[in-house]
Image 1: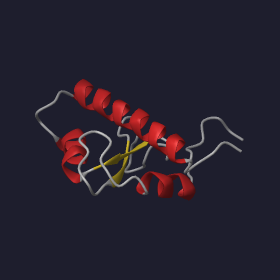
Image 2 (image 1 turned 60 degrees about the vertical axis):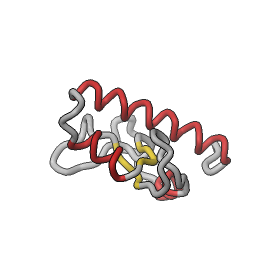
Image 3 (image 1 turned 135 degrees about the horizontal axis):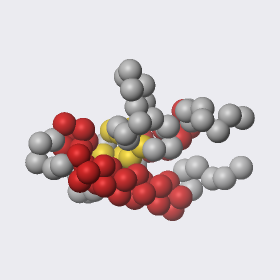
Image 4 (image 1 turned 120 degrees about the vertical axis):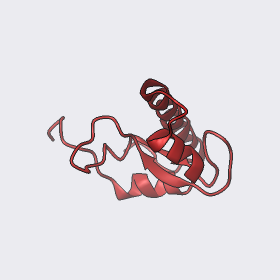
Length: 96
């Protein structure tokens, strides 16, 4: 398996989608949000670099003008880590 190939996994995305509360603010109702850095030509980053975010948090990270680009990236990285923790704690995806 090539190490530079983008990771795609529908089960992973479904697991993230099962997290009903935003990992950043706790609001109910989430979207599966991909990390923006590294994408181009409307391609998404790896599916494992996703977070369960509410619409306002997702929008503020993707399009917000209240935060610098570095702050938005740091916030998304935090959201991804918090999502990974939720996935593990809930047993939604387990290592093979």
